[in-house]
Image (cartoon, rainbow over all chains, first blue to last red; front, top):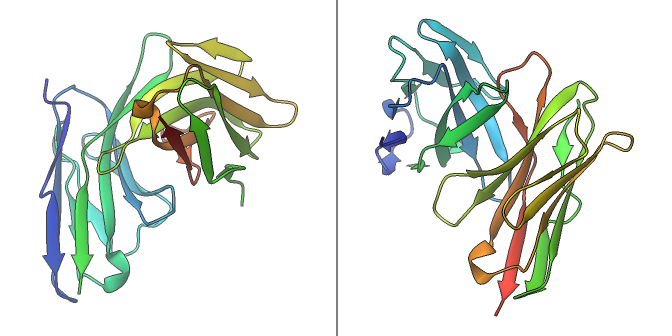
Length: 115
Length: 112
């Protein structure tokens, strides 16, 4: 299994441009989520999905859209990039284990710079 | 609002020592706690977890302790190695929620 994959690894945008960060997982996990990580900070939840066709907002959703048309894919869209969105973005997927617990697997991250 | 936080932003230890990383949480509804390790340039990696009906859980060289009375979580790493150098995050998940909330992280530096 490839686990959680993210593309691109790096991206530079100009203010106002739009783009989509791709995330895919091959573990048949129900739950997927997007986080951003800023220097010296923990991970802040942007959006999450508990299954195909179901998405919800996290802590910092403004400026981002998501969709979940398939179990495998969970793209994150920046509608009009702003310098405040310069960050490292992590996608994660998880599933409930037989013991009722959840192990969350993270992708390698996308480093985004908005000029 | 309620949050997960860490007492020490940076911890420096000598190789072979035991390391203890602490975490305070304030959401009394949290019933599941996780520790993650994040190496430079990589995504967080699951280390160990614990449910609220337990107070201790051991893994390979790692032990997590949970004190619900004072809402405190700790990660103990035995015989710390240079490869343990990383940022460690604790995360909590309230009952009924699918997604954990992360603390700010502690940087562990292991000196050879």
